[in-house]
Length: 291
Ligand code: NAD
Image 1: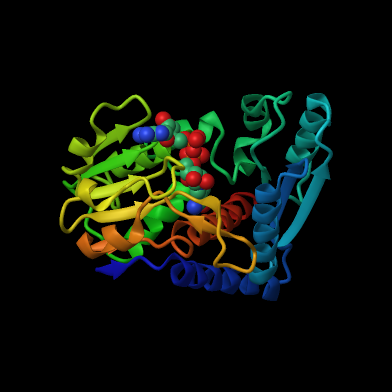
Image 2 (image 1 turned 120 degrees about the vertical axis):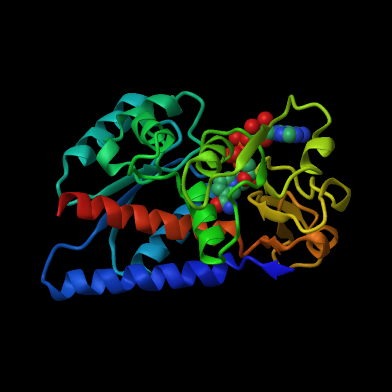
């Protein structure tokens, strides 16, 4: 079994991005700049935004975090997005989800300029991805294909089962694994909450990508010998064994599934850090589109 070490691979990517930024700096040019909007006090969102800001600092990007209170009017948020869309000094913009119920996430996504859409959620980005055209790929699926590629995991002709069909993970993941490219060229089955007899499907999978947000859902009896397992899930659960009183669990019962796998991602240290590395790559791409 080989561990798909996202922490180590993301460090490599961050160093590559930092090298690029150094060249930009040495040429005396403007630095890439990411803006992040966060609404309210959601603990997980604050942690993610802080991690994104730290990653920007590490590679040498400029970054701006704009905080709004929970009760902000949708109109004000949309105006802020329009303002950033017009700002020539900002290359990438993302709005941290989830948003309060009174704000339409669809409207927010569609207002971000497609050339600053570093989260890759805009319908134009998704459409271009579906047609295998150059675009911003959504950060988590982008991180996963990068991880598979850097470890040389074979995907062509393999049966890939994606569990979950969300717009941010499951659906784009299935599109990327099916596209005519490497990683890709897989035969993809998308499973979701209405799937009947999931186990009979996962048992046929050469590659399983678990993105349903149910801790330790995928057990050894659902996985065939030699499978590649990618665990996207991150759930905070209480723990009396950690100082913080909680720990992170993935969607895979790692201890019993890992011995059956050819490759597997850990949680933490697998897909999570790759997501942030992909965001940096997307921001650099947005910068080069302009410069
Ligand atoms: P979501 O809640 O939007 O989607 C979950 C999907 O799982 C749905 O499509 C649903 O149909 C499916 N599902 C639910 N129960 C199921 C079942 N019993 N059988 C089969 N399918 C089932 O979640 P999401 O935003 O896609 O996130 C999924 C998980 O990935 C969460 O734990 C989230 O925290 C994590 N996540 C991690 C990263 C990362 O960087 N590592 C990024 C995004 C999301």
